[in-house]
Image 1 (cartoon, each protein chain N blue to C red):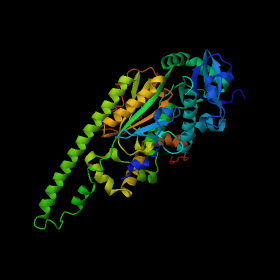
Image 2 (cartoon, rainbow over the protein chains, first blue to last red):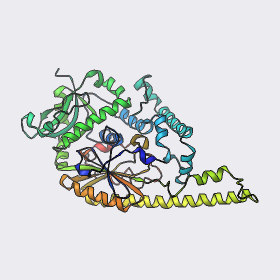
Image 3 (cartoon, helix red, strand yellow):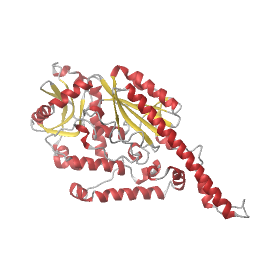
Image 4 (cartoon, each protein chain N blue to C red):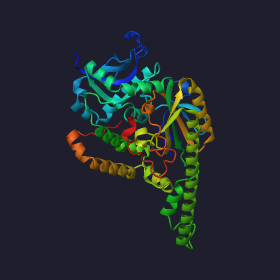
Length: 146
Length: 303
C-alpha cells in the first residue's frame, strides 16, 4: 500500500553521528538503522511544532499573544494541516475507524471517500472556532499546505 | 532602534565571557533567526537570552496573530526557531522559550529574564549536561497478512459463481467468519503493538532521568500514516546518548509489531517545566488505543 514510502529514508548513519536537533534514525522492526528525514527541512514538522509550540518556557513577552489563539492554532494544525490532495496521498483516516474496518476503508478509497472525511473534519473544526476565526483573520483565512 | 521588537529563542547561563566568546553565540555564527536576522545575546542577572531583532510589520501583535494562522509562515518560523535553539544547544545547556515570545527592545528582554529568573535558573541547574531524545513507535501495517481484497470481494459479490446452490448462505456465513477472523487478527496484533509500546517506554524510562509522554501525532501533520502508538521524550545525559540510542535499536529489533523512530538529540524542550507528574497524566501514551486523536496538550505544562 506504500504508506511506508511516504517516509523518506536515507542511508544508514548512526543516530548519534547526526547533528544536534536533527532527526536521528528510524529503526525498523528488523532493527536496521536508517536515517529518517522528511524532506529538505530535516526534522518532521510535527516533532518540531510539538516542541516549539507546546513546550519550552512560557513567559509573557511585551507582545501579548493570547495563548488561546495558539491553542486554537494547534487544534487546527492537527486537523487541517494537509490539503485534501495531500491527505489523499497519505491515507489518513485510520483513527476514525475500527481496526477491523480499516483495510476495507483503505481499499475502497484512494479517492473521494477520504477527501470527504477530511473536508468534513475541516468543516467541523472551522465551525467550532468560527467566532475566533472571524475576529482573528477577518476573511484572510487560508489553509496552506505544508 | 532600542525599542524595536526582539524575538527571544532561548536562555543560557551567562558565563561571564565577552559576548563574542559566549559558546552559544559562537555556535550560532552563520545561523539566522525567524526573520533571517543575526542572533545576539542580552545578558542580565547571570543569564543571557538569545534573541534577534524582528520587523514590526510581522511581529507586532496584530500581524503576528495573523501570521500564526498562516501555516507556511508558521512552519518557517518554527523551523528557524528550532534551528537557533538546537544549534546553540549543541554547545551549551539552553532553556528554550516558547515560539513567538517577542519583547520590546533589549530592555524588554532584560525584563523577561528578571521575571523568569527563578524558573530559568532552576531549569538550567536541572538540565545542564542533558539532552532530549524523542522516541516514537508506529504499528506496522498489517497489509501482508490481511489481504484487503478479502472483505471487499465477499461483500461485492454475494452471488459468486463458485457457489451456485446457496450463494446467499455461503457467502453470508463465510463473510461473517472471515470478518470475525480478521477482527481477531487485528485485535491480536493490536495487543502485540500495545504491549510492545509499553515495553519500549518502560525500558527507556528506566534508562532516562526523566520521561514525558506526548499525545500521538496526527498523521496529517507528521506525514506518517502508520498508527502512532508511542510518542515520548526522554531526558538523557549527553554522554549517555550513544548507549541510549543503542538500546532503542535493540528494542526495535525485539518488537516486530512496531516501527521505532528515534529523533534527537534535542534541546530539553519537553523538560523545561518542573512537572514530575506528566507521566501519569494526559497522553495515555503507550495505550493510545481508543482515542489516538491527540487533543491539544494542556497549556499548563509550563509551570
